[in-house]
Length: 100
Image 1: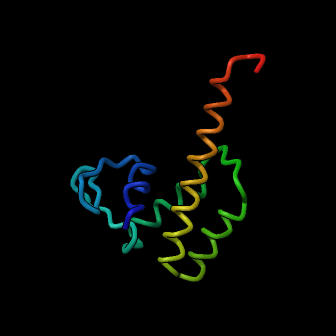
Image 2: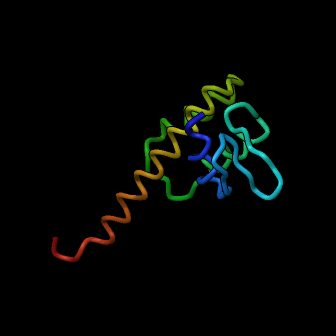
Image 3: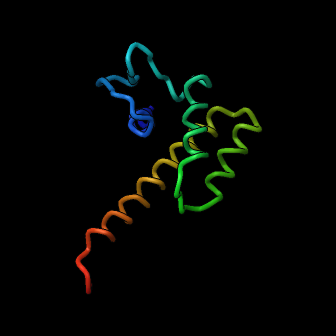
């Protein structure tokens, strides 16, 4: 899936040019493995200073309660994209000269 790279970068994993990502000797298949998707879920839930919509965290929780890996994958991707968007806004705000 296209978003495995996005998730791997969020988790700090290096990636090759295929659809899987490698940290050390472990291969991550975020879109098909609960074993690798759950640590991403945990990181999303405990991301400090996330000022985005609480509905995103609700989507993460509901997907786990329903044991729906596809919904969790989609919720994780949505959370990461929103987190990146908020971080870019924050950085551009901090980079703006005073008085603008």
